[in-house]
Length: 80
Image (cartoon, rainbow, N blue to C red; front, side, top):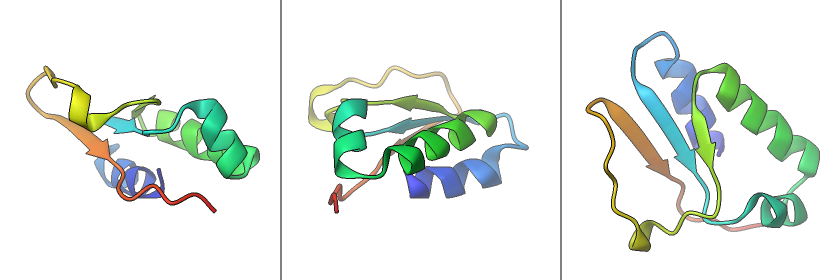
């Protein structure tokens, strides 16, 4: 989510919609990384106007989003 956070900082003054996604569920993120860090990042993303969706498998979704929406799939996800 750090890439999404950086991107959201640059986009927050625009009208772009940013949707940050994670393959892991929120619970899995808390186990793999620091809960405090994850929660802080999610809050900062929200403060920048970004939405965060967890447990998203990019190979099994169809994106139907309004024009101007940026969906960020963070690769690779390497916990630890």
